Image (cartoon, rainbow, N blue to C red; front, side):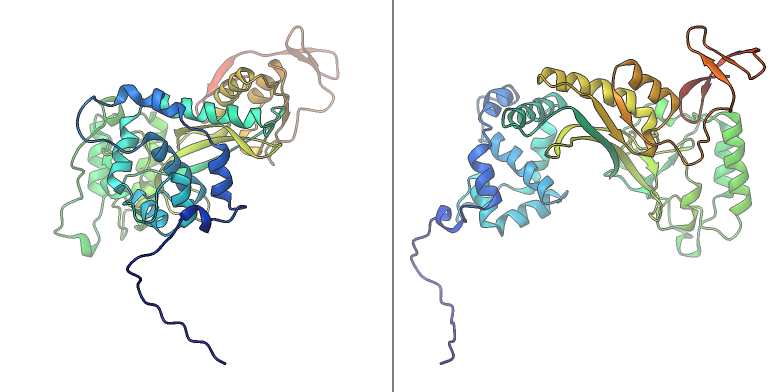
Length: 382
């Protein structure tokens, strides 16, 4: 006999959230082992003694964790997602008839706490993972990923002190037909300082930028923006974002140019636990950040009683300086060289003590100078 289900609201109902969450549910298991009561003492100094009660700091950090695990970056979408998930409600300690915090409350609370609070939370959770045997420490994998900044390419402003470049770029900037008669989009508040508004390019770089603008100025939409053909002409050397001066223009192959940050992430290879993470300027190279990452990560692991032995990374982190740096501090590097690397000249012998090469005919070939590579920011010998 065919069944037919008809829904009718009950005036009274007996419902327990804990009975509806399966025993093997991820968030239920996480709730049982994740102890965050230390947050009350850690964040107490950032609240007053009177007024309306704020969101529970434990709930706030659990919501931040849910956003990461569910890959949700918008606070508005995060709260809408949590309201539809019984297991997440159980994890953060809310019943089905309780009103969740406003998304704006999450944003304001994130701005309330300084970086040191988030760093302390990260370190404490990492220590919990170490105590559970989830972190071995001996092998760490490092990689990077761009993180989109909360700023628009349409609000980019020119760096102004160099009058010649400023006038030239404004002269060749051609507005499309749809933009004629409309003012350029301006940011409400300029948060940049004098240094961030100054041109940092050297004369050769400025000449190259002028040449590219002159070549492609005709019949091009030169307004800074990811959806315009002229987006390729914006540069961190000549433009800055007034709403987020620390953001930098960057691009990945096949993607549009955006204002981004560069997230450098370190992961323990035993159980894939994140051991370190930090944001850098997106216009920097991976191999420029490696020494800073290694020093910070090595100190963090040492504080947890772990010994780091192997460093694993992709080709982007390779450079002679990095290989030498890792060797000096006793780390084994598993970093492949660039595809263009051909090795040293055949038949030459390197004298490590006196720091020079000896050619096949037995003559000494010394290094004559030390210079800074402006492209990578590293020192090299020639």
